[in-house]
Length: 161
Image 1 (cartoon, rainbow, N blue to C red):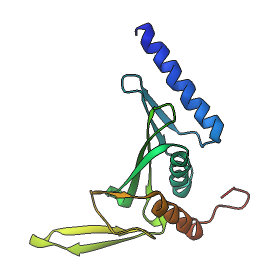
Image 2 (image 1 turned 90 degrees about the horizontal axis):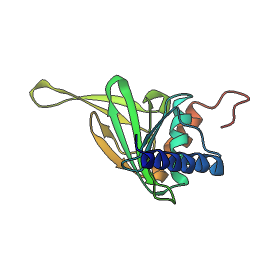
Image 3 (image 1 turned 135 degrees about the vertical axis):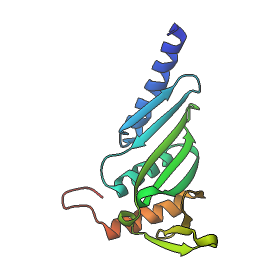
Image 4 (image 1 turned 60 degrees about the horizontal axis):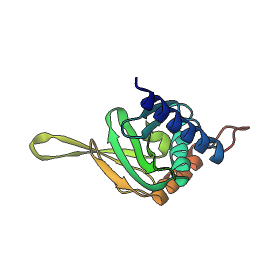
């Protein structure tokens, strides 16, 4: 690896670590750094579904130009992906996923043309999501979803909400 890549990696890593410390952010379970694109991908996989979604929201509240996409997929899971930038211009991709039911949602099946079954999910405060399709959503809608899911699945005693 050329020396320039090492310096670039060090700079990106210092920037991300500083951002986490400055805002006391939840540490991601997986972090992938790309020196070529000056970007970072962070994934949250541990803790409750609500905690993972809340972590993505907390991160994006400290970044610029956040955009959100929700995808309803296999095994009745919803995947949240967000993109944004730090003040230093590093692109950040954030992701998490979890059960529709742990988020307080419901799944419906409808008959389509030619006997095909179409599955849809309804989550509190969000428009209906069709299976295998990504829909854009807003920070406020996701914040309402997290708050609603917290009321359905409150944090255990002794755990901060």
